[in-house]
Length: 98
Ligand SMILES: [Zn+2]
Image (cartoon, rainbow, N blue to C red; front, side, top):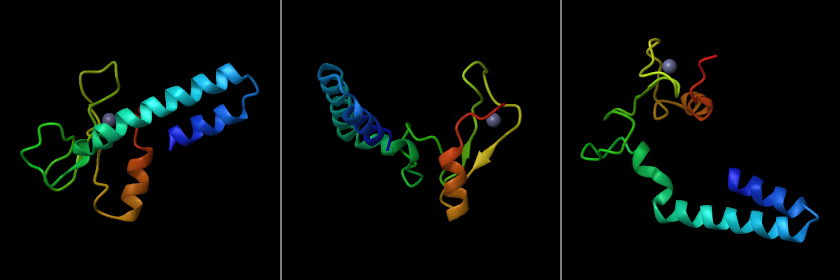
C-alpha cells in the first residue's frame, strides 16, 4: 500500500528528475518485496519449521517491545487469524507504547 502512495506522490511532483527517482526507488523496492514473497514467512502460522515467523502455531503474535527496550513488560498479544476485528487491530499494531 505504501508503494502505491509513493508512486501517487511521485506522479504529483512537477520536477521530472524527482518524479523519476521516486518511481525508480518505488519500483526497486516493490521488486525486492516480490522476490522475498513480501516476507510472508514472518506471518505463516502453519509453518512450525519456519524460524522466521513472528507468531506461534495458533497465530498469536506477542509484542517484543519498542525499539529501545529489550522486551515488553505489558505482554501484548494479538491473533489476526482469529477474526476480522483482530485483523483490523493487527494492521494498526505497530509498537504503540505511547
Ligand atoms: Zn508491548
